[in-house]
Length: 243
Length: 243
DNA sequence: GAATTTAATATGTACAAACATAGTGATTTA
DNA sequence: TAAATCACTATGTTTGTACATATTAAATTC
Image (spheres, each protein chain N blue to C red):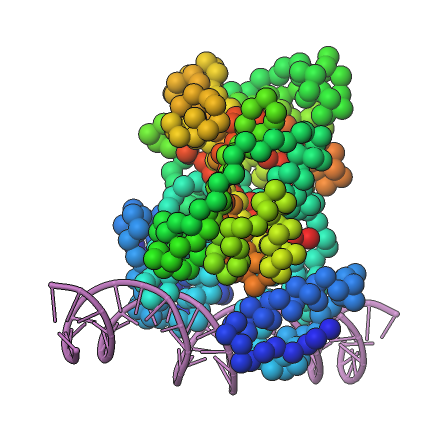
């Protein structure tokens, strides 16, 4: 394992250390309750201060990936939670897995000036155009979900891509961007006129609304995604185990 | 607000600071996007170092209760109720942490013959009565969630318990059952007449519907829970990392 | 008057140093 | 032998300091 950080890089050292620790966690070498190197040694090896190393460790402890014990050491937590694989399937993969035939009703690509919320999430100015992708998808009988995606300029997407391929394939294969982390917010709301028209339903009818924030390997924002699901067309499942 | 920490206490200063910050978060004074005092001033007021204060702040930022912005300041996150899959706080604990006052509108205990779905989940016959717990809860202004829970006989619950205490406390403290694993399904649906009446809204209005399957230490089913949330009163957040 | 520069302010990153405390195991003591 | 003590190790807490960077607003320049 490469055990050195780039002190010249603009990426903060504690972020780099965190990434390295994540790789260590994945390493079978540290799997079965074996202890990681102690903080002082590890900090010395990485040529960073113990404080900075602890910043990285703290985050992973918060996430439940590491367990620290005073006077003893730090070890990798027992693996848990399996909702990940389900969560990380793309829409089309997910439907395919359930044997649901998919029809693409609309696909619209445009370059727009981002709203403040989005610019804020992407950490860019509102005067820089970004790629917007709208998709209406569903069963052959009719649409049941309307997606809107916004992409950070750093993705390099031109808008000319073949969006019939899974999006995360395009990003990974053609632009070497791996969606690493996603945060989602699920809520219910009533359909407004626009959404109701798209989904061929009545304004005011219940919609499962899903916001999705996607980050890359370095925890940099790459996609902001909104999904409007017709009620009863979609169930979101989560499995969690006490830490 | 008492704005002093006990430097003699064995409780670490950053924990005390965290508690104080939680109280500040609950304070209407800081509610509507107003900024908290800046870190340096606040640290001085509390007579602790900025580093120690930041230790407390970090935790609350991680929990999503505070939002920090470089060059601007720190503010309380919008009080949209949210649930972290990571986090095993009960409903009331969670609301308390966010400083949202909770009112219990109804609490109804009964013994019923289970429907087939439930008997199936519990792996019991439908001719054995089980405990059903219905609760209507919300803010002082009005209810926003209606819960229905069914418990496996193995929990030992008699129905005489003080259900104002957190449920998971009762199970753990009095019956030595630890809820270890939960599977959830989230979807949207329209309120039927019964639910609409409970939640004081219109039939047909959007509802976030959450089914929850809870298992104990030995992966045996112990609770079947249904939650009907008024739209826009509840956001379900999930964070997942590629496995 | 509009555009640019500058200064003030607040959070972000990073280091070094010191002492506290919990766990472990070896050593000493009753 | 069993119990108490002690030293060692690793994490936990806390401070002080310094500089970096994003944001905003005021001052300056064109």
